[in-house]
Amino acid sequence: MSDNQPRGRLTLKDLKNQGLLDEIVAVFGDPMKAGQLLDEIDFPLGQRPTFAKALYFWREVCKEIENGLTRGGLAKLLAEAAALQPGNERFAPWADRVDSPPSSSVKPAAKLLFLAASPVDVDQIRFGPEWEDIQTIIATPNLPVPIHAVARLSVNPKVLLDAVTEQQPTILHFSGHCEPDGRMVLENGRGQVVHFLADHLCRVIRAVRSLNPVRLVCLNACCTSGVANLLTQEVECVVGSAYEVPDDLALAFSRRFYFSLAQGLPVSAALDLGLVEVERYCDGHQEISDHVRGLKDGNRRVEPRDLIRVWHRPEVNPDNLSLGSPVR
Image (cartoon, rainbow, N blue to C red; front, top):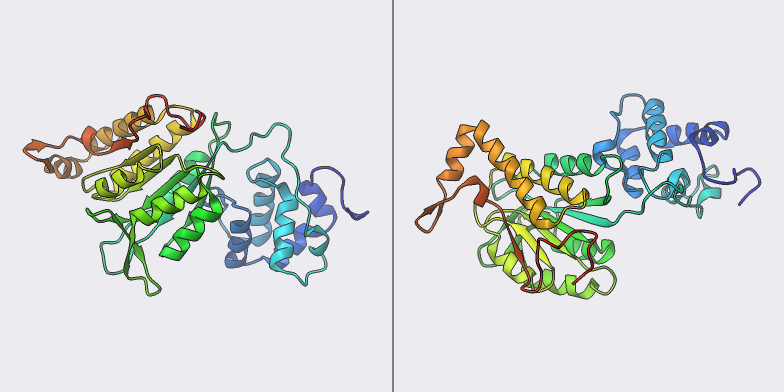
């Protein structure tokens, strides 16, 4: 540590006193560059202030980081700034510095990897609001089981493989389309449909299991039965639907589901609470309710509470599976 670096955890006051806040504003003073830097430290999208004036934006961001919103503290911010701007002499001394978490902070118990694909040649998926809602929910202060989220959007097969291997998530969330035969719909380099076998995803999950097992897969897609049945070979539980779920219902479900998981509830309870939100939404939106009740399971009419279900391995009981429970 150089003599002019403060000892202990770096604060916003330190940044101001050393002119580092002004340097951040000068170098990362437009929304695109600011977003790039914040992506590097996994600063939640839903927690980012509106970018009006760069100084105000960065001051508010630094306050949140100082309060423990991201891991590594403000020193991590400067380290990533040094990596993005290798010729910058003001950031260079911080290249290898990362603050340890404050004593009151809690290490995230789970990592959620959010994957989304919406090719241009199929019905478009509104994954933006879903990702923002998840970010907002898991950023709730003092959650018993904190969840750290990372997103990869417009996913192609390479991005999916890289993300699962690098991030080693506890929860894998896919927002997109699935085929009844067990294929996932991803994007190619032109944004068009390319299929990815669920069996290939199983093999990736199996490969990273020794590092950090994927315990739960959530499929916000239609016709997920084929994919879910394959994935339960490698993960404890898969949440999805055999039916066409309207976007607004999927949003209502995911908000309550992830909030419940972060409260330490088991998967079965989180599922049931998510379905309560689905039923409440249907009660207030007749068109959506008619759509759901127009679905058929053989000769049986589908009710809102039947719309989303859990698949699990035979030895796994969703009533006992929470993010804090032992891995089976």
